Amino acid sequence: EHFYDVHRLTIESAMEVDTEMSPHVLNLVAGEHVRVEVVERPPLDLRFAETCVVPAAATRYRLVNQGRAPAVVVCAFLKPAEVS
Image (tube, rainbow, N blue to C red; front, side, top):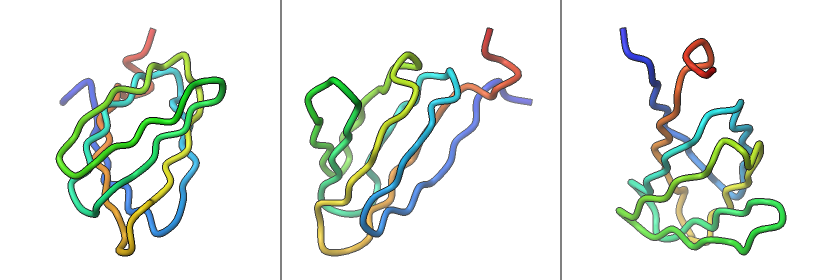
């Protein structure tokens, strides 16, 4: 049993994500370009094969597909039972 989980997020246009008090490690695995928007922070442009970390303190963020085709982001995070 792992203390983390990994999800594939398919983004047609935009998606709201709740961190649930866990940092999120994001990697764009399909598509051209996704914008990561966190309240009160400048947006981050994530391109194919790039990785970024959204801190747990962000609480929520938005992924906005900037490409023509759907984008796929792999999101790794701590399972809720493991967050202290």
